[in-house]
Length: 191
Length: 161
Image (cartoon, rainbow over all chains, first blue to last red; front, side, top):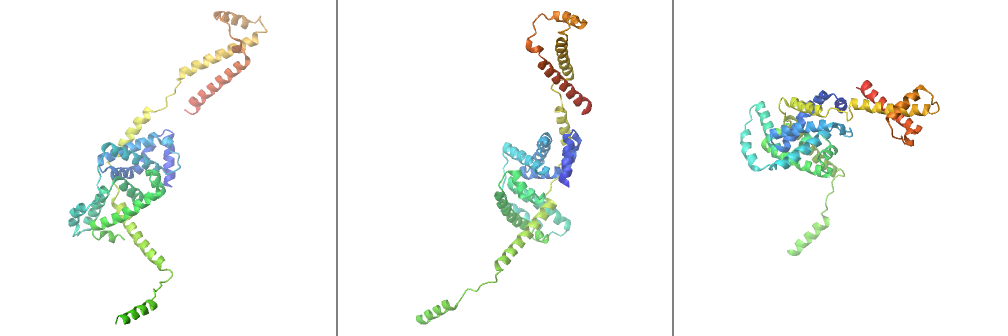
């Protein structure tokens, strides 16, 4: 249904209705921005990448053949743009380490209010995603947030399916462990 | 004493057996492992979907659309051959075709008014027209080409504009 709707708007844009592109921007801007942010870890750069990705998508829209989902095609552009930005800036990423966890676990010893829990959850999810190496954060976002299939992730990132599987398996273990530590038992309440 | 132990060892080795589990034991263990992994995955997904999405600036869409419109203006359709150029090409082609056709038609009737007019017109061009240029095949080809160009121009500008 949504893919069909995308195609309707894509056709409109290709027929000269430039304003129809706003629908595609509004529909995917959050995910595009999130993917970019999880890669480059800087809001300004992420916004630049997101804008540039949409502009490139518009310029190259005639090359989109509809063999895959529009989102898959768009995320491929985002991934390449982010990689290109990282190469330019040579941003340094770092792994989750005990120091980060130690600094934050004390804050959530006594989460009294539900709202506080929510805030904590948000804070630590961000923290974990920020601390993941760029490609790992990108994979997590694609798989868990946007629920892309392994085939789609393979198409977007160019990584092999077996490599993606292994990475996701390790990441799941690691994330669950880290988040359980950071959020104490809160993650278990979600089960 | 040691001999007694040896006997006991022998007795135990002989009589102790590894107990076998039920047939579906491995499946049951794997099922439990999968269930744990599945719940962990669900918890992780729920948490990430709840808090993992980032929102860009409020004017993000308008910024993108501004750039898109700018780009659309730059790359808007500009014909390689302008309207005037097309008209000129068609005029030249039609003149050539008419000239060739009329000349071939009137070659047998040299007393005609048109022929005398064309003769005076022909005097303007003192060079010899190569035989190939006055062949009916060339004339027909040129006529077909000019017709196609006219139809193309008409379809592009009048119907699909």
